[in-house]
Image 1 (spheres, helix red, strand yellow):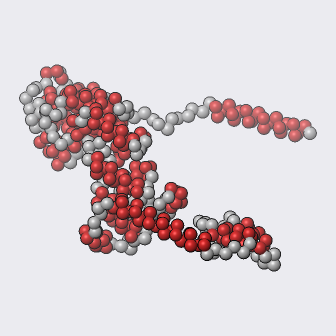
Image 2 (cartoon, one colour):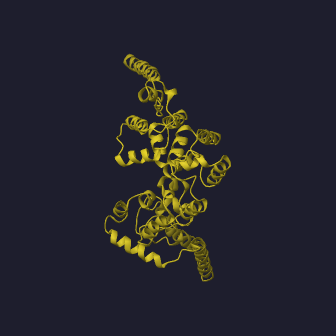
Image 3 (cartoon, helix red, strand yellow):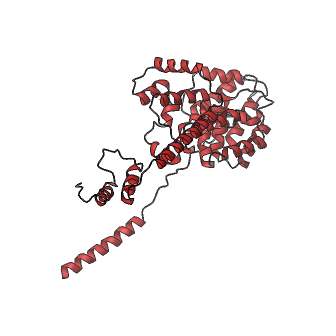
Length: 379
């Protein structure tokens, strides 16, 4: 008896000790803060004397030092083509203008990698378009739309054309995107689709509806696949290839999509891969690039006008045919007794299990119904 009490007290003491020790643990947050670049070092490294006395005359040597500073900041050496492209693009810019441009980009939270990407993707280095006022107004518009710092940096560095857009245009594009996606999904789309805000809305809307109607894809799968960053021809060719080859099953209801989603090929493997990787993951290299090219050539003889309407009309016709078949079955049905009718209804009920499989969860119920119909049946 005493040993039992001692054992119980020992467990109680140990339990409280463990709880106290676990409460003292320091939980590290999974979202660690991003280390921001200190742009104040740029002045001391590039222009050690006085940054206010920068020349207003174009100087290629100063531009080379800034480009080299950005390259050293990302710890990656730029290729000769990229360096020459940047020098040619800003050869008419004076040291003061180029320095102010880099400084204002850094003041709004852009990292050196974002600044380099923006300078490379600039469609034009016209000083009338790229001004401090336009940049400030662009960042203020993005702040008004409540984009966070990382999203703003990715958006403006991948698509510098956004500098020329006013607040009304940005708000209108965001509103139409919210008709399809959530705010969180739009943040992910900005990372996968570089021209999300500058692409023609008719083309973008057509791609979204193609994925939603023809593939019955969810918005989450559309975002994760990165398919919207490609053209409609690329999306149609890849999809029709796997569908007509019998590698992708098309569904028409949300319930079917939930079951078939894990059985079909992942959308990211269909759309967001190279041709060799696409054939490897979908056909296990049974089909070659020549086979795929032959299929693409055959699509040139097909017309895809009103393909949504034809697909939906085909769906309605199939429903009418199914309804007519159901009516014929009901008129030809002969009811012998209630038990046989119940047995037939249970057997005709669709199930995900194979008919020859013995792992159907309703197999015991079917045995009982069959025995009620004929007690002499031995199952």
